[in-house]
Image (cartoon, rainbow, N blue to C red; front, side, top):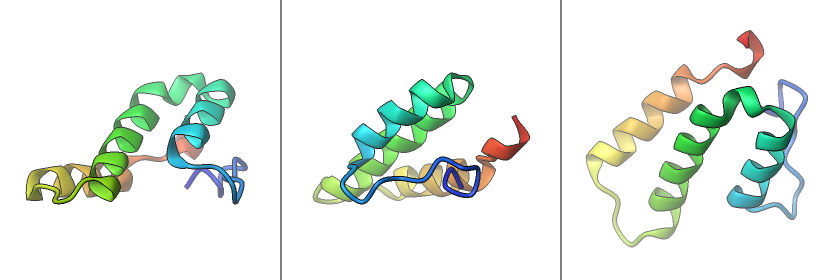
Length: 69
C-alpha cells in the first residue's frame, strides 16, 4: 500500500529499515506503520504466532490506507 502511495521499499530494506524511512517521509502515519511493522516482525520471525496476533495484523493491514491521509 505504501508503494502504491509512492513510497516503495528498496530490495535491500528489511522491515525495520523500511519503517524508519517511512516514518521520516510520512510521520503522520507513525502509529499505523509502527503497529503493523511490530506485528509483522513478531509474526515473521517468531517461532509460532498466536491467532490473535495474526488476526490483528490482517485487520490493521486491511484498514491501513496511506492515500487517504
